[in-house]
Length: 378
Image 1 (cartoon, helix red, strand yellow):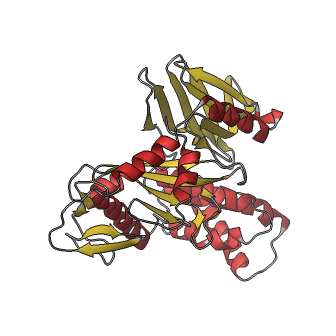
Image 2 (cartoon, helix red, strand yellow; image 1 turned 120 degrees about the vertical axis):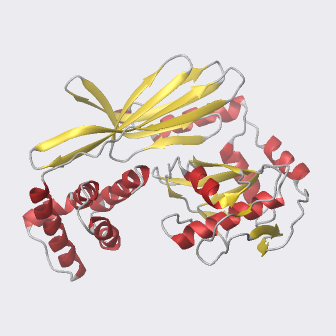
Image 3 (cartoon, rainbow, N blue to C red; image 1 turned 90 degrees about the horizontal axis):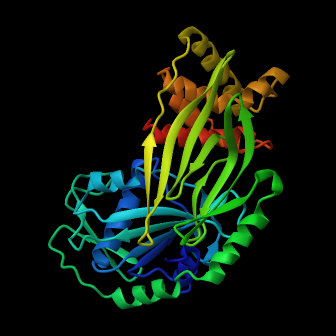
């Protein structure tokens, strides 16, 4: 197994990007431009490494090579984006790698790109990149052509050496377990389990009993052998189950409009550990958007808009409005689910104003709302 934290350190030791790895301070998949640039880098690295993995490290300041981290990203459909736009698509995997010096909610993103040994190119246009465009790397530069391109392998030996030097061992695994326990207070109930005598999984979360159900909030789950954060949630309720071969995470979302509320299952993630030293992760979307009274929702939507308008004009909020502000992102999300016109645009519009607030509660809920909406393809 490869210790992904050590792999990132080995990649960054090269300092400058090259034809088998790139580093970014952040990526954005919320816009056509952001998606297009990501596709360009994936395509270029795939074509430049037909016989070995290539990598994109996200959350690193480019000039000083400083690890700054990014938010946890759990879009399981990122491969679908690659398949939709790239002919002969490489297999990619996005992983979240925790670093001890980063805040608990920050990670380093690691994109692993595995070429299928065929020339990858755009099969349809996106942003300013036209259909048929072939991207490739020359050193740290991404270049392109609309003509023929011959795959040439130049990095196989060096990448194999880097990956070999990042192999996990007992000391790294034990250090990872102790590090996990030290980073989580007793109230988060940190624990571990060994699967198939090979995989060490640690998890932590605040226990919450609702009726006959047991939930965990602020959940953090890491596969210690590979130093990968598999799941992280700041707000949602999570149900945890496991057996000899599998670890099962069911994520719930608490939604409430006045006196109507419930815990709605969002997504189930099953981590299956195999006897051959490998594991796979399967996700199943469970969410069925709840429908609320449209008259009540229009009233709530208008109230959210009035609060947003006050934030824009820097007008003081009443005490009741301050309480409503805490639920503004969630209420906008519910309005999106119930097809209230412009609700999603208003939610996006609120981002910067919520981010600028001294109390970050509303901004955290904004990020959770966007994450949930992304999962259900809004």
